[in-house]
Amino acid sequence: MFGNARKAISAYQKVGVDAAIEVADPHRLILLLFSGAQAAIGNARTAMQQQQIAAKGEAISKAIDIIGNGLKVSLDLEKGGEIAERLDALYDYLVLLLLRANLNNDLHALEEVSGLLEEIHSAWRDISPNAVQQAVA
Image 1 (cartoon, rainbow, N blue to C red):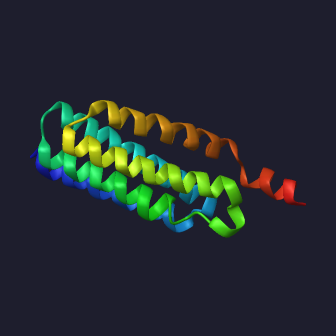
Image 2 (image 1 turned 90 degrees about the vertical axis):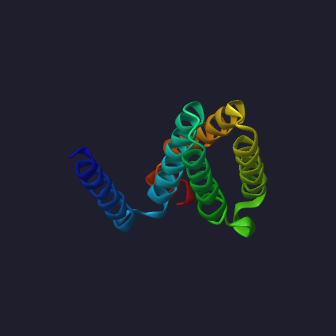
Image 3 (image 1 turned 135 degrees about the vertical axis):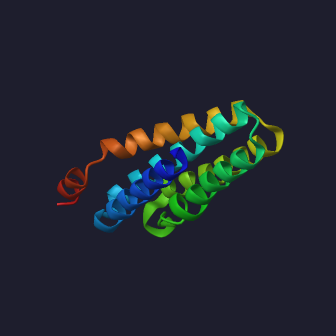
């Protein structure tokens, strides 16, 4: 009985995320990537605490994918200058921390990644596309 409800909820959430991605501007897409990475890290934390090895590995892999193939790839190293270079290096560091967390069941490494991501996410939330356009004009 609950299995079908969980599938329905999961499908609904996926449709909601898919719809949000389809209508999102680039700024909003980055915010969604940060949120997705944080959610994956939260799932990894829970799985690690409950000693669910497969679920932990899947959640950490998802976080790595979002950081490495989403956030990192979105950087424009030519136009972004030093900030983009530093973020690029930071994303590499976060991926290494996640790998260590997975291999060693290192909850502290997960917390460090989550904290660093939240700092960047918070700064990104404070940047409105309108403010950026006004600064350029």
